Amino acid sequence: MDSLADPHFGNDIAEMSSSIDLIDQFVAIGTSKGLYVSSPSVQASSAQQTIFDVNVFKTGVRISDPLFEEVYSGAANLEFPKNSGKHLVFAANFIVAAKKQNASNFDVHPLNGFQTAFAPGPISNTGGLVGDYILKLTKQQIAAHQAGAGQPNYVMPDAIKNLPAFGDSTLGVALDLAPFFDANSNGCYDPQNGDYPIIKGDQAIYWINHPLDKNLELEYHWMMYGFSAQGTALDSSLFVQYTIVNRAQVAYDSVQVGLFLDTDLGNAVDDYVGCDRINNVMYSYNGTLFDAGQGSSSGYGNSTPAVGVKFLSDSMSSLIYYNIGPSSNGDPATAQDWLNYMNAKWKNGMAMRYGGNGFNSSGVSNVNTTHMFTGDPVALTGWTELTPGGAQPQNQSGDRRLFGAIPAFSLQPNERKTIEIAVGVGKTPGTNTVIGQNINAMVATLNQAKLFNDSIQLPALSFATTDTCSALSVNDFIATQGVNLSVFPIPSSGDLTIEAEEQIRLIEVYDMKGAKVMSIPTRQNKAQLSLSDYRDGFYLIRVQLEDDTWLIRKVIKQQ
Image (cartoon, rainbow, N blue to C red):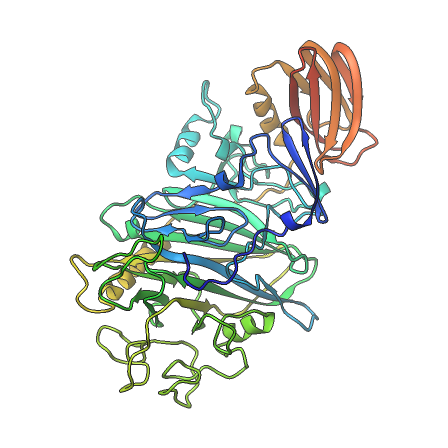
């Protein structure tokens, strides 16, 4: 557990809940931000974690949480080696400061690096969306799909079938969501015709979320990926691709992004941090030769690795280390605090200076700088935590927090900016004999990871330009249900026919916000209904058969 961590916040959806109802297999929660509707396979929140485990790392991903943090238990969640019970990082989070064109202030999200501050799925005009906005894919699944799509007896994996490639405009969702390979160049995602998700790595987790703060009209698309390559640098590397999409109607003329990183190398309170500015790496290493355990956290003993993050897509424009607590060189709590840290300033607006703690300790010079602790801790040259003031005594090791920022950029409406990082580990054979001895190995791992990542050749990325052929995936969905229920035509201009082998007792129609718009009792195998008076978009048809079985089908109404 993080030694002196700030309180970890739950998703504020729970705090705003006003009602909860069970509708057949769906759980509906009414909140001040809209209606949230679960999928039929809803599980307890503790089970809603998708596991990354393709190489030496193991970590969980929850769609609304920071990276590497086990919010529900308050424990670190980047395990190395996997299944060892030992952890490297307590939490990480991208902090975004964005200013709209002609605005005077920046909106910053989140204000707390540990905070669960994301809403699942893309930006919409309703509080909740039906659909899967986090999925796990493998290279083998995609290769099998390329060979098997359209062939008899091929069973498509749910992760490929349910890729959130396009949005429902009637809910205020953008059409262009997840990228894919468009096999027939028809502008829509129809995997039964050979389309497939585009991922990197042997295993990837893809998810979409956005700020709960509605002032920031930004959408985040994430991909965590890695390679199974035992004995190579790739086996000790984990990649995160973070894409920001401007969903506002105006440009953001300035967007600043930084990565908050709370490293806990086994024992959380005996670490040091540093920066390799030449190689674009921020890192952490143990401050003692023996890493003892702390509470429920296992220590690494006399064989502690070094862990680092390398910015792959952008240069690191600043790197700051700050303390726990409210001081001027402590935990940021306001938008201005984060803006200062992004621009190599302390919370009081004073510039970071070379030497000492960069703020107010002995050894601090009058020379302004943008990156802290850029020296070599092993050779004891330059500015490090072991030589903070030259001849002055070393810093006391402790619970470290780093924040590395990249240069500012702009985003036009619907424009995307992708930021890519690699997390890497260095571990030399044998026991630790010198503090920081694994730093060079860690930097070498990250540099090799970048070289390989730069060499990856991907198919051409496509984004949805239409949803009209989604009916094919709906038909595929119907074919897997095991009951002969037909709903046609799809898409429909309004008039639909519903036909079943068994007698139909009741037909209900729900819009994608969860509101019931129609209820039709009947005692026939075949019935008609009209959606002509309703707006275009997706609807759920809920059919009760004579034996009380309920079936749900998804239809599209489009003029």
